[in-house]
Image (cartoon, rainbow, N blue to C red; front, side):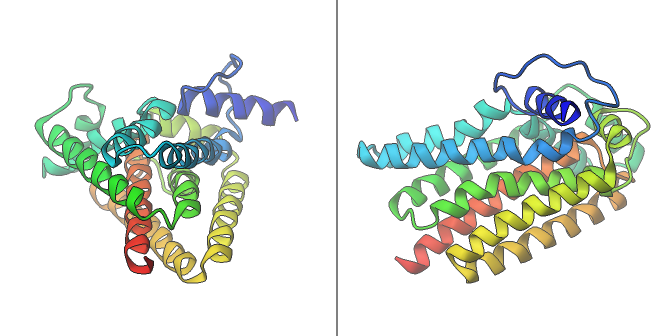
Length: 257
């Protein structure tokens, strides 16, 4: 039980800005830490749901709702996954060989391609949130999209070979009980999808197909272009997963209204 509690504290302290007791990182405390990653997404989802309800009750303008909705996941997560998204965009757009791409992932500097993709992502999410505010039909899937995206990122780390002999992904992958963590992540993904299926079976089916397709595509991308997964690549797929679910929620609202 103490190991699970320590793993939760490690996950919260690393993957979010939420308060957590200070815990020493070692093989014991990190053994199941990745299994708690979706709980950070659940917290973000709950806050996003609450913000949408509050904004509509206060009859705020869509732009104000959209701006805060874009910032909420970044504020809670500390931008750790967005950082991975930026580094991956720089690496992929370099069209360099595998070794050079891995060096770009390690480079702390932000390149032009990362800036362009960041601006595009934020503008797109802002527009999607503003549209969602006009037709908030898919509030439950919106909230569940955050933990669901993190199950994909966690599964990537424990099921795809690591690209480097060092780094955050390697540290967690080596310390993790891979089978146990993968099983826990799959159960959490199944729970999210079951709730969405209960809400609307068609939306749930599409979400399951998109989630499975995203994990398959990401595995192929990691192995082909980088020789394996890294922490930045996991952050990249988490960001893509959140954005895809947001877009799906907006599309649903447009269809059923």
